[in-house]
Amino acid sequence: MYGRVLESATDTHYNTADDYPIKTTMTIQTNTEFERARTALESKSPKELTTFILSLAFAPDGIGNYIHMLAASDDLATLSELINAELADLRKGEREYNYRHRQGSRVVHRVDRFLDAIETMLLPAYPSGAFHALAHFIESDEEIGSNCGEDHFGASQAFDRACELLLSIAQSLPTAQTGQVLERLRSHDDFGLRSKLACVASPTANPHTNAGPSPARPAKSRIWK
Image (cartoon, rainbow, N blue to C red; front, top):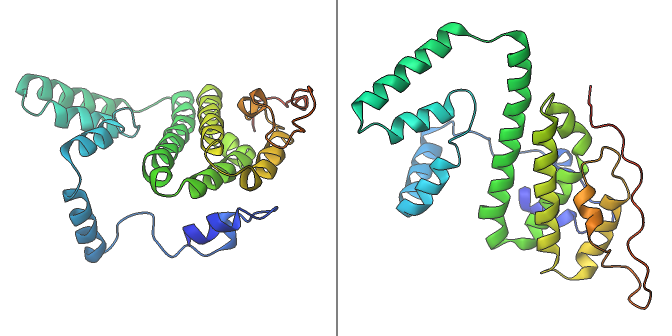
């Protein structure tokens, strides 16, 4: 399914993932899936697994704390301190403002993991697919930016990263495959989250002119409701 959606992105008006039913569940739910995942992970090198685990070190909902506990499991004093700190957090709870801010930060962390997956898993095997997955992501800036809630800085940083990665991948792909997509993304920066795309001249610009890239449209406020 995913490859099918990504291939459709080569069209002038590519489809979104909502156009096709998702047959693969996001989480492992059956014993067969669990064993398949175990076999796949056991084939990874210690360095790959360490890098992946540490990528979750700042994840919310106690995941980062859990990683810290695992890393400190050979140090009983530190482990005990972390356990007590986690218990204190569970008892204290959160104020409404902290809860709202954390909800936005959760989305930002999930976005970061999504971009990590594209960069480290999809890109090496399927550069064209990675390019179009990022294009889909950037074109969804209104919805994703809104879901990031009050973490406007985190959302801005994530989209900057996505834009820079998209441009980097575009350099290795034919202009005929990327040019129209980049032009469309540049021309609709309504929420100020695509500014990194305007920093590079359009690959479809006339090579015989000295004109720079078209001026970006004025961005709307980054405050979402």
